[in-house]
Amino acid sequence: MSLERHISVLVEIIYTLSGRGLTKDADLLKDTIRSLGHEVSVRALPPQHPRIRALSGKLGRAKKRLPSARTIELTNTLQRRIRRLFSIKTRNAGLVIHLENIHPHYINPRCTNWLIPNQEWFRTERSHYLTDIDAVLCKTRIAESRFKSLHGKVKYLGFSTPGAGQAKTAQPYHKPPGAYLHVAGSSLSKGTSAVISAWEKHPEWPPLTIVANNPLVERPLPANIELRKNLSSKDMEKLWRRTSVAIIPSEVEGYGQVLGEAMLAGAVIITTDAPPMNELVTARRGYLVPWSEERPWRLGTRYKVTADALESCLLKVLEEPRDTVEAKAREAYLWALDNHQAFAQRLSMFIKSAAPQKTPLANRENADQHG
Image (cartoon, rainbow, N blue to C red):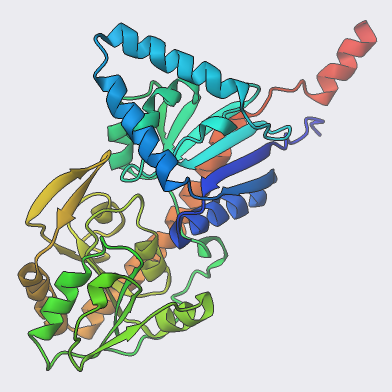
């Protein structure tokens, strides 16, 4: 029997408390890393003060106006060195994971530093700190392609949804037909206006539940739309349990956590035919709506779906045989399970490669005897 022992790594996850979605991402990483046998701590930082954030943006824009690339490089180097003087110790971590954005105060030069970004929210004024990041691990293929021009070590990690690791191998719920749901939360980029406009034209359509806490729903809604706000996790779980069709024509996503939740709940999804939404949802496991216009959004792209395009897709779904819709939902559910396993395996491999190399016990004993 081999005397080589499993190397447990102390991992510290750093992220900003900017919303429920990022907290779910941190929880998923924490739970998955613990399931792999490593110790994890999570540090949730308060949002940066708006004035400091504005000053940081102004500094970034000012540096771009410096007379030469060499001057910009020297300025960035000086800024990084000053930051190191005020860095905050991350215990005795062997690996620090910066989630969504780089957190300069928490870059630990004594260990491995990773960035797991959301490209649509990545703060480009912090791009020069990528020099201090050992690897960029991307949730999606589109993020991988965007960061390859910024860093020499970019890898595809993939991502998953909380609960996918504990889900069973059979579809969990029998879905009643005609239960439609749109989840936006506080986001203004989930295509909410197009969803409402499409439903307004069809009073004969089944009832739609909208979960949103944003200004886009502050308008008179038709009788076949029910608005719900500030739902707890338990209430959302009950809602997903009875939802057969999730309508989420997102304009932009870092990964698409709400899409993963829909698939794991056994709902069929209607979403935007653009990355990364169509990386998670394909024609085999959902319905894709063509977009009409696009525009850059930090390192991502926002894609707009019109109410007319969404209406055409919904009419198709409403006419589909129930067996066809249920088959897509089951395909999506099984994909969510397989996807989680693949994500956990890649994460395990990457952590193992980042772990400090220790001599196997048997070799150390032999070395002691010869010494």
